[in-house]
Amino acid sequence: MSAHTVITCDTVTDSVPCRGRTTAYPTCIVSFARECAGHDGWRTRTVPRTGEVVDLCPDCARRKALPARLIPGRRCPPGSPCHLLGHDATGHRVANLLARLGWSLEQAALIADAELACIRGFGPESIARIKSYRPDRGAQT
Image 1 (cartoon, rainbow, N blue to C red):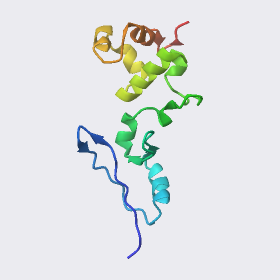
Image 2 (image 1 turned 30 degrees about the horizontal axis):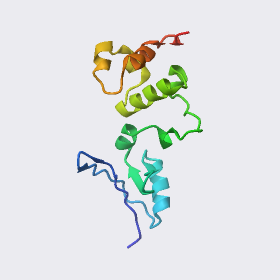
Image 3 (image 1 turned 180 degrees about the vertical axis):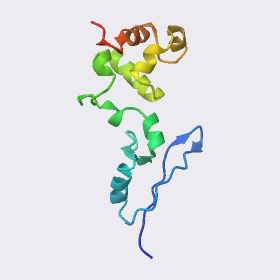
Image 4 (image 1 turned 90 degrees about the horizontal axis):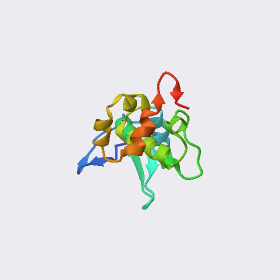
């Protein structure tokens, strides 16, 4: 019998584990299996307070915050909404909220102001910043 590694998703939502699993990778080296899983959309992150390494399946990885939680001093990833919303506190907060919701800036711009106001985290300034975006022209000047 040859050695193999199966990676399981470590995400727990409302006390329910994700149960996502990879196929068996023909290795006993976990770091190599994680590298192979990365090609299939899996992500590995380190929990800031505990230093624990967690594996996220492709579905859970999309619902999490932007890569590496945009550590201060790091550049924003290409295509991030904050390039259009502004690289200030409001622009980054709105970009993070959109990422958590799994929405694109274009989708959020089409939603009515009253509906956006019902979502926790979107205040008048955030809504105004979203509405200033025009899909046909990019950000309004």
